[in-house]
Image (cartoon, rainbow, N blue to C red; front, side, top):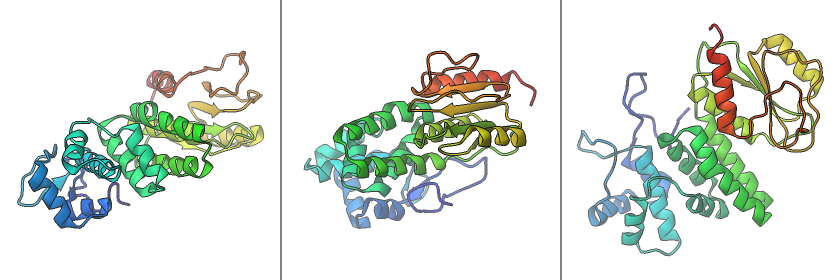
Length: 278
């Protein structure tokens, strides 16, 4: 499965350099003829961050990110020269550029913007600086279709981060019974994978009995339960570490850890797993 804008990576071995894409693949992503992309380079001196070693241009994630920003700024009415200057000095996808794509229901473009951002930032940074603010802005708009579209784009981008191989036992991730908002756990799974930690994500609305069955089958080193709405902690769940994440839990939850953020949950899990024999 491809991990970028629609082209096969130049190299795939573990020792290979970062994934890059051809000018043709990037032009297709932008919805532009290759001649327009060439003209942009000629007229606006676009400085690519990817080292160029052959006669044909190669684009890395940061370069694709900048070109997507440039195109969106042009679509919003900014002149091409000004858009180029702003896009190639912005340092990463911004919330407004992402929201512009989502509000136009260009979900594939939104996914590509998120993937490009993940190429230069870790999962926690992308979640806190880009995903959560964008979701919050759309929630204020009360646009269910746009929230669903952005959620799909975020999940698709996070799924590009592969699970580590040969790591066990895993961290078990699940939503409390009745909770169907899974994105925070999608982000935690990707963040754990980024740290070389295996996680098994069970999805939304897991009854206590099913959670206990899953624990008995997998013997996880830790369980993370998410609840965005009022929920009661699970009973008779015997695990080395239980994290109750989200605002839905009561103030007192016994010995369970209560991380306030994605980054805090990752630190707690890293510390717990790092102190156990592999």
